[in-house]
Image 1 (cartoon, rainbow, N blue to C red):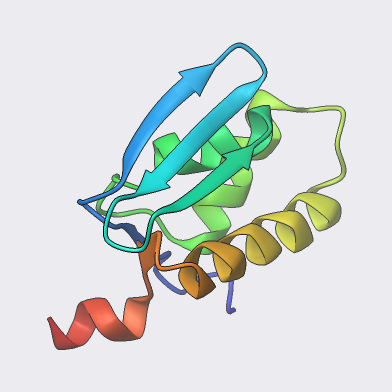
Image 2 (cartoon, rainbow, N blue to C red):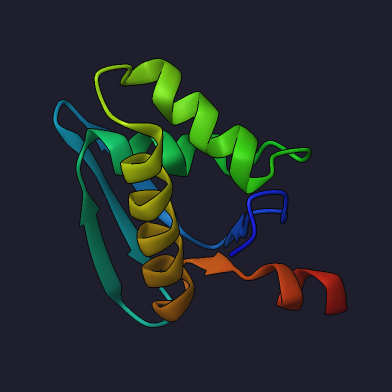
Length: 99
């Protein structure tokens, strides 16, 4: 995923609950539950922002967790987004462009 590429959009049918140590997502169509830590929950909360690209998403996560290396954050963000796409919890940028 290129850094300037738009990030996937949250699937509007997903129900989610923020917890003290992260969040839990639920996809009613597929009955998939997905739990995530605090970093994952922050990424999920940032997804609805329309102008967000990979670089600005990673920068926002880095600002919230400044003790982490930006390179590690980028790898972790890309891995999480790929998992969310695979599980149908977000709409990939290619699918969003078609819709």
